[in-house]
Amino acid sequence: MWRGIVFLKKNRPPLSGYLNVQRRMYRMRKSVLTLLASTALATGLTGCVLAPQTIELSESYEIEQPAASVSRGALIRVVDNREEISSDERQSLGSRGGRLAENSPLYVQDELSAVLTRRLQDSMTQLGFGGESPLDPVKLELAVNRFRYSCNEGFLVTACSVSIRFNMMVIDGGTTFTKPYGLSESRRVAAAPVKEYNEKWVNDVLDRLWEYIFSDPELREYLGV
Image 1 (tube, rainbow, N blue to C red):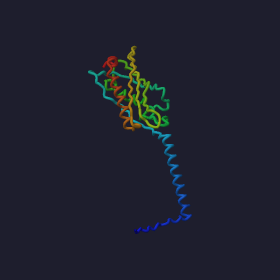
Image 2: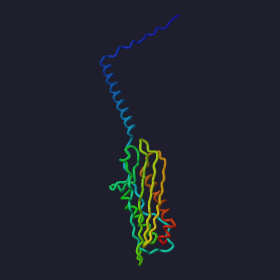
Image 3: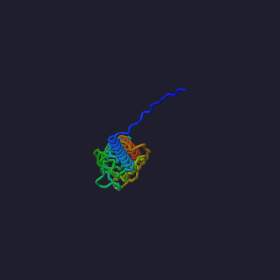
């Protein structure tokens, strides 16, 4: 019985210089992997700080027109009574949340009271106020007790809310009408909302509240519209 003969190739020991190169490359790869792992761990623990955002609040809203023009003067003012917002941050609506939420504010294009003053003036003009009249002008004050946008803190932003609380006061001669109005809404989100989302959402909440205020029969009756 014939058997085949297999010649086994002997592996020669690598040169010592080659071993040194291999060891250096291994140590380098290990160092790089360690650095990448440390960076990933640090990122996972700290998360990303969200950048500040500035949204544009609409300064007008079409309301129901009166049957007849009022043709009367009006004095208006908006008072920002928000306690959670410092006096030098009156453009802020709150925080976008995330890690270091205090460094991730949401701003509007101007001081909130200035934006709402222009909006209120536009609404009163639509109702017919601003013309000449022998009567003393009606006085209208909108107090902003709350106008807050907020999201949860932490690595992932999953929930946000918009909350607005106004108090409307109308002074006509020796009589005064005062009434609170408010609206809040919360949403679940997959990630921190982008500017376009926040702008549309905040304006939508404000518009719905504005519609409710200027459709209120008590307020309209007191204004004579």
